[in-house]
Length: 192
Image (cartoon, rainbow, N blue to C red; front, side):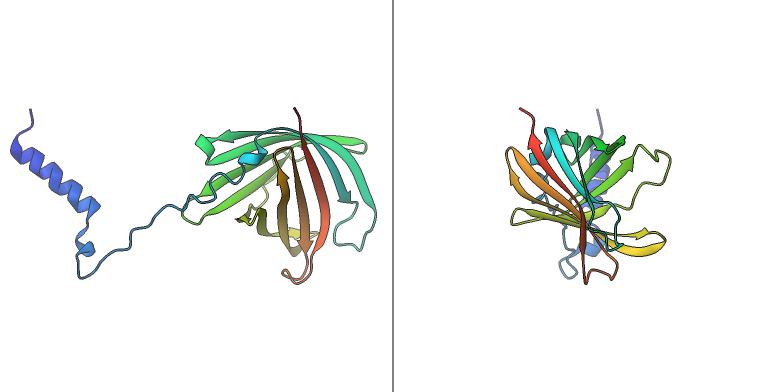
């Protein structure tokens, strides 16, 4: 059994942690609240999908030649909804490969971060994450990256989301976001 002195010491130590001296009435501390408003934004993606891809053969090279191919996506929730991961099969003409998309939600910023790992370069550095959120049913995510040694801005957009379909597109900007070239689109159809 703990003595009253030990109980008092533990209570005072707990109060010091919860209410530090700098949090006095004349110097109130702002208490941060978790922003969980976007925590379930990617719930629509959980499950199995058939994917129809359309991508420019060359990016930021004034190309107008599109390649069309199919694939699959299987997405699972992680960490009780704070993250998710998908396994993608991408059937490029003459070269199928796999990729993993990993997403995590940050309640301090209210933003999602998305990373991509490509099986063709499994030991390469993971791409910089795109970060963003959903507003009015559209998710927009940005990152700074490089293409052929030059800086570019990357944008992912999720839209046209229904229980059985979704649209994703990737765009690159060579001028800091003044102009954008959409270079890859994906049409998702849920597998029943």
